[in-house]
Length: 430
Image 1 (tube, rainbow, N blue to C red):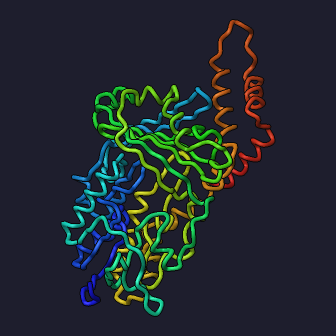
Image 2 (image 1 turned 90 degrees about the horizontal axis):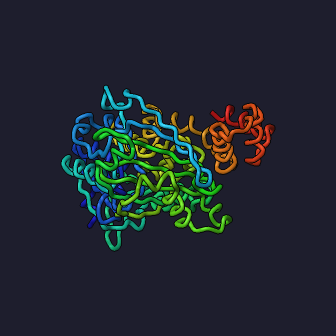
Image 3 (image 1 turned 135 degrees about the vertical axis):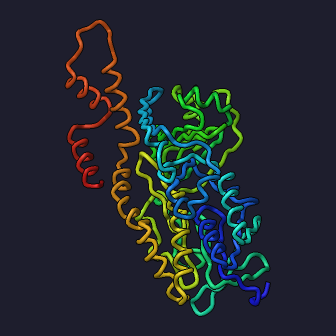
């Protein structure tokens, strides 16, 4: 393709960030090309997954009516595991599923959702091509002017890098270096098919209601955690681990994940299900601290995972809504700035206006809190130990509650002084 066949924008990656940007640009009449390495949009994406509808509403409120949701999240759950014991806390509030649709959240399957959003972008006039790997950027006098895919050169006024956490485009532009092992986790996930009625019975859900569960203590002391989302006729179950700790642990990720599947509190939920998908992927874990110092170069914008836009608070994980927001911000900057050299600064201004960067900054404390290693071993053991003593009845004279708690603290390997220091760090962090 010669330079005379120029696009207004080339988007590398057909995930939520890239497709949101392509949708708005194409809707505004721009000539947009989306290039996806996978065989189809969503084919290479690994997410729990859950999306907050407000972001899609901001993209286009008309999209909410037929979006490719699975279940509306009605139950927010946290599970704590120690050995074969567990505690599960279930927060259920009618307001989670009633009222304004844009304020709800939904479970999704990425292969389905991403294809749906790609179809919507194509309806607006965007061209989406799959099964093509972009190998390099075309740069002239410090400006990105296009991309190289195999022997083909494709040119555009602006390139949007939406190619994931280990963004080759960002590396080629000199905006990021090789990924540091302490800034990413290794995520593994299975999609396990079960009849809708079985899921509703096991999770105590009404039709189309869903649960989102975070799991702590399932990584055998490794920095990380698990997740479980109910889909219409399947369950998404997964874990995220810090890679350098896995090596030190001396155990395979797959083995730890299988032990989670067989846990007495998890297996009854997935029993008799059929695994129809197994996937693994790098996941950004550093939050605002892990974002590139610059999110643009003249002619290039970083969006979604390429920009490190993921928030893990321990009780929820946000990525897809932030990806959509970044795609919206990129499109607004492109459409609102006629001076090509000023699109980058305009993009940053839109990220501020759309409240994405302020939200990322507020998440810094959570990352500091989650850096405490005892959260993944000692504290789950303490929580389980306290519960064990509270519900133990053996016919003997029971100890007073204070003694029981102190006994559980000693058994967990913690000290009161250590807990006070961790508590103070936690308060300061958030």
